[in-house]
Image 1 (spheres, rainbow, N blue to C red):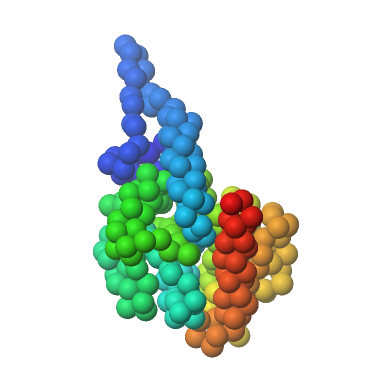
Image 2 (image 1 turned 90 degrees about the vertical axis):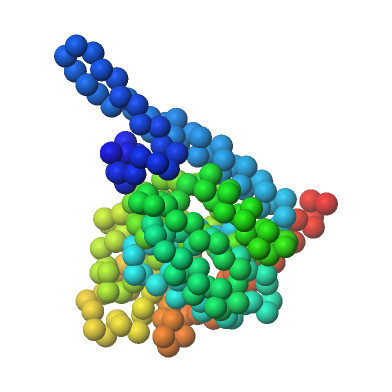
Amino acid sequence: MCDVCGCGNHDHSHDHTVVTDDTTRRNVEIKQSLLSRNEQVAASNREHFDRHNILAINLISSPGSGKTTLLEKTIEALKDEFKIGVLEGDIETERDAERVRAKGAAAVQLTTGGACHLEAPLVHKGFHALEKQMEGYPDILFIENVGNLVCPSSFYLGEHLRVVLVSVPEGPDKPAKYPKAFKTSDVFIITKADLLPFFDFDVEKVKEEALSLNPNLKVFVVSAKTGEGLQEWFQFLREKVYEKKGAAKETK
């Protein structure tokens, strides 16, 4: 079993080492070296994104929170303003990438074959495939991580923004149960807000709990079904893209 994430997959760049002697057998701690290697590649990814003025956004959440649906709505709203590329992380299938392409964005599926998170080397490889598909560079790169609130929070991919999503049906206790996901994120999106009348989900209390972990979180409450909060999210993205392009011009 993986010493870092518990994913149980022995074929996604993890180095599993066993040391034995006459009386004991133990797993060597490899977490630090694994994360160090990931950080090195993530820094290279970030440098590449910055060089080409790409705003990279890492979306993390539990399965079924609505990441792909939010992406579909975002692509529909912004595809005429910006070039959008998507790296879709899943354990198996290309279904989410197909959904994204149907909305008009370029997409590359990253299948982990069992691993519970994306790592920087896979993102690096996937982005070069996306460059070829687009014949150029996106203004916005969305990285939809594997559905999981634990492991993705430990692996920096080179993104400029990390966005954590929680849907109303998941319940209000996610910030308390998964604090690292919120501490390491820049944006918190509460999704499926149209279901609030049917669940015991106190939006203000959840916001308060998340902000107690990370006071700098930008919080949105959205519904892809009714459109609630989506315009605010779209405007936030516009501003971030313009900020990045403006900063790039100032450095020239």
